Length: 450
Image 1 (cartoon, one colour):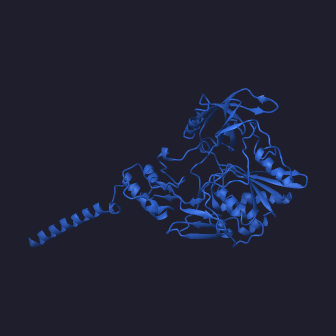
Image 2 (cartoon, rainbow, N blue to C red):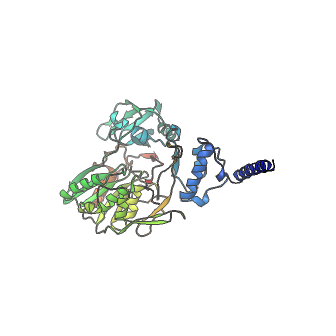
Image 3 (cartoon, rainbow, N blue to C red):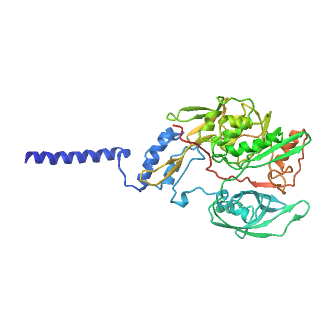
C-alpha cells in the first residue's frame, strides 16, 4: 500500500513538474501539428539561427497568429525583402505582373493623357502569345480608363489576378497613334528565358549586346556559347542589359563575371558573405562561387571563351537587383564598369530557402535575409541602390524601341560613348508617373553555405 501510494505521489509530482516547465518556456511546449503555434515556433527557431538581424527579433510575440503575419512581425525595419509562403496557401505566394502574365509596365503622362507603357514581354508568356510587345501603350485596364488617380490601384490589382484585359494603342513618330485594340490575358506559367543578344558593327567597333532577364540556375553554358560567338566576330565592346533583371542564381552571375573580367585568376576573391554570429564571414573566389551551384562548366572553360575587354557597359534601372547588382559591384575591382540608366534596387543581400518538412510534407518555406554582400575591395552596403555613372530615363520619349535596337535610348547612349559621340538628347515632354518595380521578393538564392 505504501509503495502504491508513493508511486501515485511521484506520478502526480512528475506531471506537475512537466506542466510547470511547459508554462515557463514556450520553446518546450509541444504544440499540435498543423496549428499556427506549431508552425510559428519552428519559424522563430529558424530565424533566431539564420536571420541576419536575429538579435533584433522580438520575444513573446503571439504564436497564434497566421504564420505569414507572424513571420512579418519578426523582421527588422531595415529588411525589405525577406518573405515566407506555404505551397498549399495560394494567397501566401508572392505574385506580380511578371510572374502572372510575363510582362511589366510603367505609367506616363503625355499631352494630358495617362498611359501604361509595356516595358518588356517574356518569350512564351500570356502577354507575348496575345500579341503584346514592348512600347505598346495601354489606355484601359479591365475596361477602366487609366488616370492619374487610379493607375497605382489598377497596377496593384493585376499582380494577383487570374485574368486581365487591356486596350492597346501604338505610337510612332511617322504614323502617330494607331487605332485601339482589345487584349485579353489569362495567367499561366512562363518558362525560363534565353538571353537576347546581337552584334552591332559600326566603324571599327564590334559591339556585343547581351540582355539577361534573370540569372537562372545553369546559365553558364549558354553564356559561354554567346561569348564564343562574340569572340568569333571580334567583339571588342560589350553592353550588358540588366535593367529588368531582378536577380537569381549567384553562380550564373559569377559565370558571366568570369567571361567579362580581364586578367583574373581562379583564386582571386570575388565575393564575401557576411552573416550573423552563427553564419560568420565566408570569402569565395571566382572558382568557388562558380562551383557553388554550377557543376557542368568549369572556370577554365569559361576563361577560354572570355574576351579581352577594358570596360563593360551595364544598362540598369530600379528593377536591376540582387545578382544583377553583384555584376556591377563585384566586377569593379577587376574592370571598368560604366553604368547607364537609373538607380538600382539596392538588394545587397542573399539567402537560401528554409523548408519545414517535419510532417513528411512541405510546410512553410522561409526566404530570410541571411548574408550581406561585399566585393574584393570590401565594398558593399548599397541598400539604397547603386547610382549609375550616367543617369538616363528610358521613358524620355513616348516611342519605346525594342531591346537591342541601336536606337533604344539607353543602348544608343552606350553606343555613342563607344564611338566618342555626344549622342542625342531629345524629349517628347513625357512625365513619368511611376517606375515599375517587379518581383519585389526576388533576391539571390544560395545553396546552404553552413
